[in-house]
Length: 225
Image 1 (cartoon, rainbow, N blue to C red):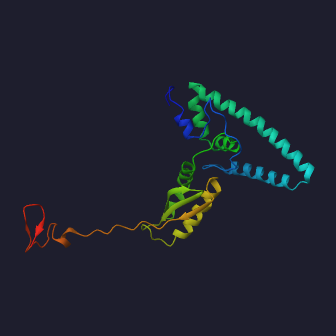
Image 2 (cartoon, rainbow, N blue to C red):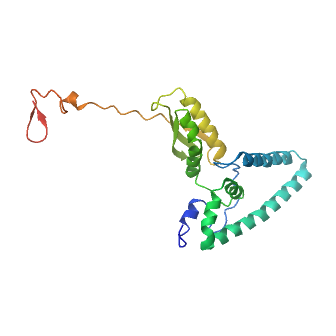
Image 3 (cartoon, rainbow, N blue to C red):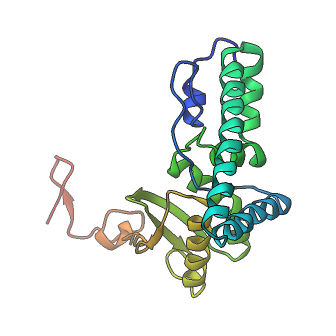
């Protein structure tokens, strides 16, 4: 990355600029494409702790929630300061962008609402992560668009648009997308695009070996009888 690069790449990653106010609220997403088993285990522990706090009685739950909000506010303030200072420093900006691509760092920044990645970008990354598995099944999936929380995809098998594995693949892809992309709540499978049908030129008398008897050129590029 060049030292004089603008904030466009950071914006694509959802990073706040040095002059913009940090986004309010939490993203609610606890997983990221490429995360490790250890990271998923840590995220699971967080979810379990949140569940146990929700089961406490009124005063105890309010005290626990207040403590959580206070700790998160301190962490978020520190993280925002780190991100902004690194963005403003030509030497640190490239390292910051590399760190954001690390699953642990990305999840941490997303938990605190510091980055809000584009759902299309995130969904594309998720599909790229499971593409080796899909190809091992002689299948693939394509993201067409995301609208109002619904991801529209096409799935295909070894022969385009026709495979008994397609329903299983669609179900697997839908589960992964809804679990890993917070902005996606549902997945719809679009019909496969039809395979183009080609008509040999010999069938219409215009290719090598075609029967051109009774057909003459009228001088304008067309054929007449």
